Image 1 (cartoon, rainbow, N blue to C red):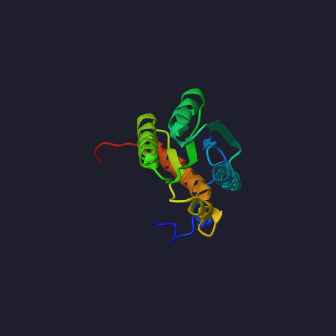
Image 2: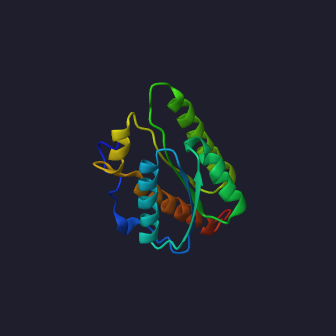
Image 3: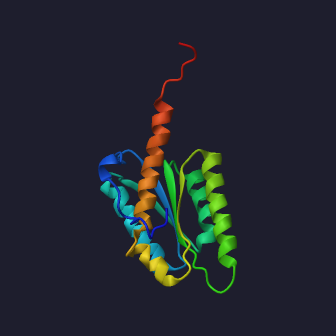
Length: 169
């Protein structure tokens, strides 16, 4: 759903499981720090609001490096989920298409291959104002949405792992 139709920060917090025992990594791109740091703050605050006490943060130069940063966290730390925070503004060339495509595919592949939820908290706006609108502006903050998604995905993974598998009756 387009953020113009839904505030990224609004959700029913009574439906969110506790994150008390969950361990999170957040990888933040340095490019567009006014945007990415606002996303990061909202993400970390939301995780903490729901009980998370274990949050490891890593910074990478740009959004393109988010996948590699997430892989490093997964390979070196015991985490339940990794949230990737970045922003790629369209600009005058088509660089954004290549970066966005590579990052989206990389994050998806990493999540599927490792079994650890890797969350796409990347803004892909046409201009700086659209990014501001989604980093705490009129459409809320995608960092909140990314944190809620991470908690829900870890809870899903944990609940499926606990279900007893039976064959027959």
